[in-house]
Amino acid sequence: MGKDVIVACDFAGREEVLSFLDKFTEEKPFVKIGMELFYAAGPDIVREIKRRGHKIFLDLKLHDIPNTVKKAMAVLSGLDVDMTNLHAAGTQAMMEAAIEGLTRPDGTRPILIAVTQLTSTSQERMERDILIEKPINEVVMHYAETAKHAGLDGVVCSPLEAEAVHEACGSQFLTVTPGVRFAGGEVGDQVRVMTPEQAKKIGSDYIVVGRPITAAENPVAAYRRCVTEFVDE
Image 1 (spheres, rainbow, N blue to C red):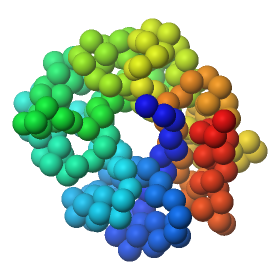
Image 2 (cartoon, helix red, strand yellow):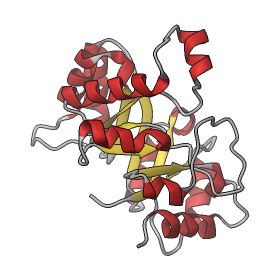
Image 3 (cartoon, helix red, strand yellow):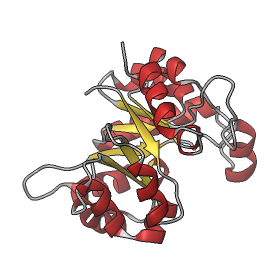
Image 4 (tube, helix red, strand yellow):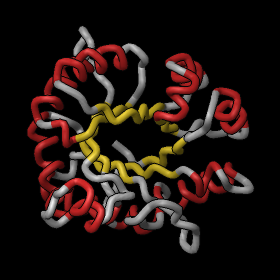
């Protein structure tokens, strides 16, 4: 599976995201639909963007009791998304139930990945707010290994952790890494960040890029820069 740039389409509604995607007359970027857009526009926006020819990462980060997650994943599998996710903190039982629900009668399913720790999380915040006192890298590795044992395809992690995840879980275990910014760009609310070129060097499989593309003066040029730095040889 080749590397790819996923564009985080964190827009407030249908018109905004379609207007943004209309700018791409040659490429069909892999797009991430997150909570804001999904809750505003509903499942139909997923179907519409899919009809336009885009791959879709549906980023809803499910986290509930196993049976609820299983049923929710069964619904999401019918949307024909290419990738979706959940929180690894929901336990191995929840992740196993998610795979069961996501798998279609013909045996196919979208890529399923687990969120380890959000890129907005620091060691200090993790200890203070959620009482996890282990080193953040150790926590991420444990969550990744649990996700692999549950049968998931990979994890969402900081690009700073992608190399270690591959060492612990194998090169085929996917790393999807947000927290990517161009050199010299604003980091926003992200804490653990890296450039596309750096993410490529340490082995990220997918990078998720939002504001550096969506808020750029020329989003298509910014997207192409990302592809050049991360994907192209």
